Length: 240
Length: 217
Ligand SMILES: Nc1ncnc2c1ncn2[C@@H]1O[C@H](COP(=O)(O)OP(=O)(O)O)[C@@H](O)[C@H]1O
Ligand SMILES: [Mg+2]
Image (cartoon, rainbow over the protein chains, first blue to last red):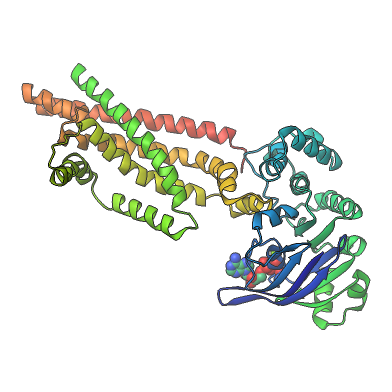
């Protein structure tokens, strides 16, 4: 469970998050939508402290994220993150990308880590690509490999920051399928995306962010059909 | 001529040792330059600025003459220092500052997403540096390191001043016997040119190799 209370974040004078409060239950899939620059990425990055919040409180399970005493690396090991541009390690093969952190951070032996990696690669349909370098994969394959890399840490929560927006349209589906499978297995997920089909089918709840605040939230149906705020409706009309 | 060749060989090995030690210094200082710790960052900055902001010739003289003199004043004992040791030390310390800047630039050229991905997996700063950033940065700094090697190779001619018998000094000794200034200096010049051209050729080859094996971008 993730509990966010009155989260603020400023970059210098620019206040990007202005009091975010929300609660994400275990196994819940929360889809975050909103205009560009509304603070979606910053919100996600605060959850694993890639950005240091200016004020407010975040608790993920027993980790008091915003408590200075918390071991940041231990926390991050429990929170997987998938980036828009994949950020695979280009000097390592797909397999090495996946086994590195489980070995170095979790202390798994190479055998254990590879076993875990292969079973993930099978699941996402990339088993035959284990030995190749990321640059020889398509965008969709790279993003699936990046998801496998995050999953290999067996995190409690997965964060996705526009995981399909850098992909060619024909590759979006294969990544969304992997994410949907993950959701069905009961992973807690926070997903920033403009894929409304995914939000509707997989999302349990949609947060609409605007100018650093959660303007409204609710089930996908209630947001898509019955938005309370004009800004939400304007945004949705542009995107649907 | 054989005399000059001996000098050229000395020039090469002195440069090789100085730059090798310089690379070790530069790796440490280059990483330190980007440390989170203000003190470490400040010290490495001071080292880099002081070395790059002063002439190598004066650095050589300080190490060969200045420091023994200081030690003599303090301990009242003569502690002569070997010219080769002094010369190579001065060049290595000098090279270290330039390599540190090359290393820093190499590290900073790696996309931020790389360290964010590593950190988001729970890797520490040190692990991220060692397994993710440095391996990628090292590939990019090989060509500028080659240029540093060439620059140092030419600069070792300054060691002739303290009597290290590298190429330039050997030539001067030869001139002292033959008085044939022009042909000997011209010969020296051509030998430096031959060495630097060969090295840049090697760098180009290495670069091409790296371009082939670089599957990164
Ligand atoms: N590291 C940063 N430094 C300064 N400003 C930033 C930084 N990251 C994001 N911002 C600014 O914060 C605002 C929100 O950015 P972001 O969270 O990326 O929005 P979104 O993901 O919703 O498009 C933008 O105005 C952006 O320019
Ligand atoms: Mg964003």
